[in-house]
Image 1 (cartoon, rainbow, N blue to C red):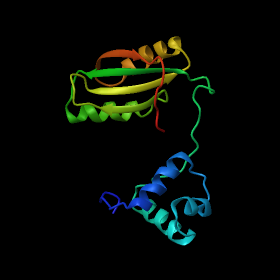
Image 2: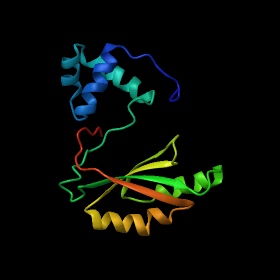
Image 3: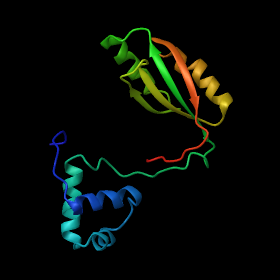
Image 4: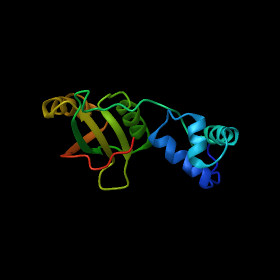
Length: 153
């Protein structure tokens, strides 16, 4: 069932909205806020988890307080876009800890990466020593973020 779409009613949507901002909320408080009792609220949460809509709970870290304030977006163009090349790139990019996100694009380039480092010098090292050496990378273009206006974790 994880790949099947399920119908979400207003209670389900309220649960998801609240859990996105406070994953540690108690079932009692969640139930109070959505206007149901505890048991039906817990049953809905279990159904949302079983359906794969809620995929887990985790701590959200502040990268700036951890010394990782530099964000760059990198366009990557590959020299080969056959399936074996894409698979090789996909597997290799997963091993780069500085890459927070990697999206295959339908564009004039092949991938868009979100890369987080401590500063521009660290980014330059990651780009030159790691990203540029990933399988089939032909070229990259970097866009440095000046400010995060909205980020959803």
